[in-house]
Amino acid sequence: MKLMNYGLALSAGALCVFGFAPFGMFPIPVLALAVLFVLWGSAGTPRAAALLGFAFGLGLFSAGINWIYVALHDFGEMPMWLAGPATLLFAAFLALFTALAGYIQAQINVKFAQRFASSSPDLQGEVGKGESEARKPGYTSVVLVMPAAWVLIEWLRGMIFTGFPWLTLGYAHSGSPLAGYAPLLGVYGVSLVAAVCAGLLAILWRERWNQRGQLALAAFVVFWLAGLLLRSVAWTHSQGSPFTVSLLQGNIGQDTKFKEESLDDTLDTYRRLAMQNPAKLTVMPETALPMMQDEVPQSLIEQLRDNARQNGGDVLIGAFERDGGGYYNSVFPLGASENRFAEDQHYRKHHLVIFGEFIPLRPVFGWLINEVLHIPMGDLARGDLRQAPLAVAGQRVAVDICYEDVFGEEVITALPEATLLVNMTNDAWYGDSNAAAQHNQMSQLRALETGRMLLRATNTGVTSIIGVDGRVLQRLPQHQQAVLQGMAQGYAGTTPYVRWGNAAVLLLIALMLAGSLWLGKRRNS
Image (cartoon, rainbow, N blue to C red):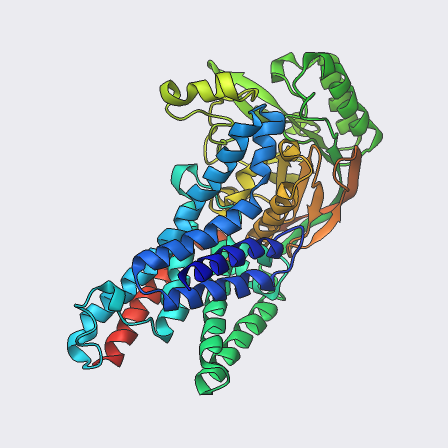
């Protein structure tokens, strides 16, 4: 039976992936998490709960981030026999977080049983026999402790070792009614509501259609209806007039992008795409010009600048930048803004990819970049966390590069000053996998959290225009050279999440744990 439960947890975790882009079956992760909660409820010990959590996480991450293999093997040139185990080990490492969630919720239940045993004759004789005989968790645990532990560990996963919040439960709900909670509490708040709903389904499964089961079902419906109503709330308001945008998708192969013999073709591609598609704001992908900013041919700079000025706007260019001996992954504008602002405007990437853009403990891990992986510019300097939005095309644009936009708490540092969000990325590293679609879905949450439109210019996709409500308004097919032309709108105002950040959901988690303690004490008094 135990092996069957672990297999069920593993399968439920793997099925979760269908809730995320490109599949978008958002009810599946809620149902899968409900299965895990039921299994946790029947686990005899914290150790067993941790193993169930590990199995669930292993299924989730093995199926959900297998694109890491593509980056390591196809483009990092890591041998297959090393890239495969490395991807699996990374999934197992991430599964340790879900194991920790299982352990924590089980330990809390054991502590509750021990604390209240003296006031409840039914519990006397159970605790003291060892944690394997501890009481099964009650209803407050399933709807308070388990969801709170799950989201607390999701938040921890998004912070520790520079953070990896990929496949956070809330992202599956970019298009569901629960997305209405994002402007209030951010993606972790959406996760929390989804996890509570999973707990309610677990109670419904346990109680079937008795009174408690009916109450659980009613509460479940209320959460989803409330989210639907919140989706209709306008937290921010438009500012200024709509303007034209051109988002360039050069579709430059990752295997040729940094080769010197391909450089001229790359520069000509982006020159042509920019000049043939006039717009007030033109955006190139991350490091579209794969060279140092001061090495970009002056003739190309003049052509792009003059073209942008003729359009009454600006072009945002991705390139590397050197300063004081350090090298940065940067964005700089050319065009009409240079006539109005004397300061040297640029954005330097702050949140670098571990082992991809910087090497921790270089004496220990330096060999990984230098001898195993072939990643260009693998040791970059870090820009400041707080950087002023770029004043371009009549907007205040908050730029983020690559997977910086998966960290909502960092994106909001440019708000409420910023009127528009722009993500410039290169997901060509992950080939024809689900990574680009998952990344685009995470950008949808940033638009929802901030009440701002978000423009995504990518090398191979997904290039898209995301509305202030988080919906994808336009997008290009992947792996095609094309330009996405459309309209954008600046916005002003502040959502609750911009004001509070993750502090609100962390406070809510603390209140849920404290509330479960109080309810347990009250029940056993």
